[in-house]
Amino acid sequence: MIPDIQPSWTLVDMLTILVTIYISVDYYIHIMKKESLPLSSSTLSVLKTLGAMIKAARLERGMSQAELSQRLGVSRYTVIALEKGDPKVGVGTVFEAATIVGIPLLADDQRALNKLATTVANLTSILPARGRRKTVALQDDF
Image (cartoon, rainbow, N blue to C red):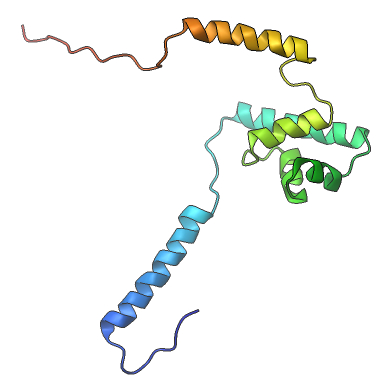
């Protein structure tokens, strides 16, 4: 709420109020507003496909969006966004929705998933701990 301007206010008082309003609006625009993520067309296509698969499996099970949202602990609008392939929906929410409607992720059963997890753990154990290489100082003073 903007206070009424009083005749006793100084120019500094009025500028302070204007700056406060500007900062509030700027905060909303840049911080609170979710901006688009820079994703490749391939990633967006996969998200839309997975969302459509979740929707089809949900309908096949006779489950409403409200029922799925209740099981996920999210709003119905989040389920709608998920089914449209919105990249802003959390990956955990997407994976849990897929599991609830019966879409296997990475493996068909728990034993196959455990085997895959072991394989990945073995692979990561032989990889370097860090992804960056040390910079080597070049001696180019000939």
